Length: 81
Image (cartoon, rainbow, N blue to C red):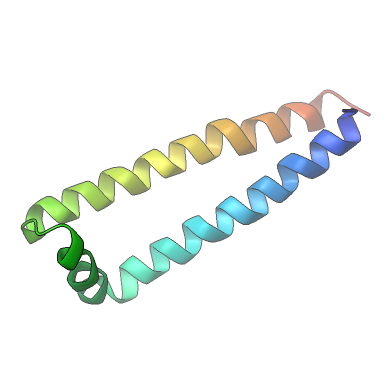
């Protein structure tokens, strides 16, 4: 693959994964009780534990998003061409 294709690939990765992250964050921000009730049917855990798990998972997703999507795109942009 040449750099132009890689830039487009990582740009689309940023758009898709960023949209998933934003959708998920807003969904949890505006309807936390609904999300908890749905998840409780599959994983019956206390609300406090659920909050910690969701917060940790959002943080992990954000870190992985930055490392595997944004950083490669920025490095390709800075390398020229």
